[in-house]
Length: 314
Image: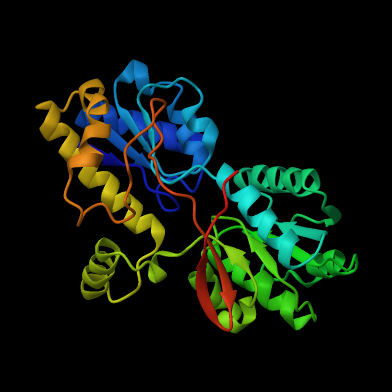
């Protein structure tokens, strides 16, 4: 059996509540795998999932979830470490050296902020302002954005969930900031644009490539089927969890068992053998430590369009 530990209504991003809910679910239903959609919940479950014998299907790009030696954890989206160099390199080459940071204050955003600021400085850039804001408790970001703008940055780093990130950007534009923005991977350019006031408000902004602009047959097919069923554009979370679920089922079929360790041992094979119509992001396999192997992507908004950009690797 497969379980899902959902956010918001179930445990409101509380790791302790997530652990309590999953303990109950495992005891009552003897599940093989639990889908967990945030880092804190993953860390909480890693304290007992091996002992209780269930797989964690982790929707987080935090590299450390697969660096802790937990053999029953699978990280679904690509780890975020690939974005720091790519986003910083592009912005420094095209936009300027002075960065102002106005990211969110939750743990994931703090780690993202620290790491991109380190990358920026290592590449010769200057951090001229740092003013984190609680994206979850306010809709008024004028004061915080103004403090960052007062340092006259060439580029502004923002990011939390897509909706409040859109509000931050809209207010930054209203205050007169017309420069480029770097968005952390939690915020998706197309979703942010809906709140910010359109893609024109995100001109010359950098972020991950949203599902809506993927041109592969698998992505187009998934988008069409999702829109038919739900009458809206799917986000990357829907697509990644969809492919992960199909990979999990395929791994069970290959293993001839729902025993978690057997399923885990067949996941790489499952990702390579499952039908391409299910593998929306073209995941190539799974690393020894449990990370899905997916290409790092980058997009820039140019002339009101989201344009995918190649990432140079050294």
